[in-house]
Length: 332
Image 1: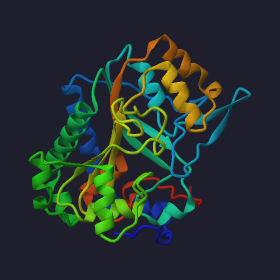
Image 2 (image 1 turned 180 degrees about the vertical axis):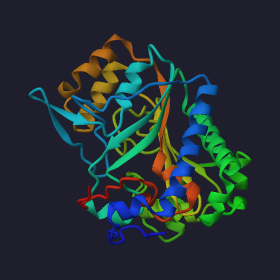
Image 3 (image 1 turned 90 degrees about the vertical axis):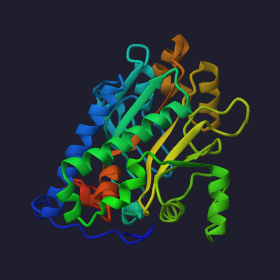
């Protein structure tokens, strides 16, 4: 597994990559993972929508990732970095919805060697009206458990050929998940010799350290305000603390899921936009929806390629993508 900030790998020619037995195995696992995800979510009463690809704004993102512009009949539109704003807007008609959403994020070139970043990727994107963080976490845990159970039932020989051991998933398949707060994660990292800012996202190396130190997946709750987007809801009883979470996989695979309760109050959203340096005027369509009344909600995005990498045990996301685009690397 690549350490954080390793040099960018040299990718094989695309034709060789597409013909490799390793990619074929990964795609068989991905196919079963998607089947199980859709089956699980539909069984939980969710409706699948097809997400938008472009819009006047997109998720402002973080960690240095940028959105790509497209010329849309003379207007500058953005390729979706995530469809979070559209998920919220859709709740009035679809109170339990999900996307298998393609996203494009121009990640910093130094992330090419982390094994955990691609410019093009997909998310299993879920949103639930009138839900709490805990309810969203229950769905995320159930989804991951169901997917792991299904792939080990459907394609066990493929996973074993890739070097995976069924015993490594025993606790996950039994539904065992731990949780800690961001503050507790920072303290745990200090004890492990890694300095992590208490005011920022858990950095990539810290995620890897926490992941290697764990025996099964765990939630990290309560990120500090300012470390995430304006749409993550601030805890009304604890100013400066967000009602959000990440789900970290064990074994060094890092974050699989990011989620949160969402801000739904119009005035609070405008304030949070200004606090995070965003110009509310750019978000006119979204704020018009918010002014008319957004549903309170919670939701999450589960990275599909990160999920398949975790299931297959391969070293890097490019190995589980048919058409990989590494940050800073020009490829077809």
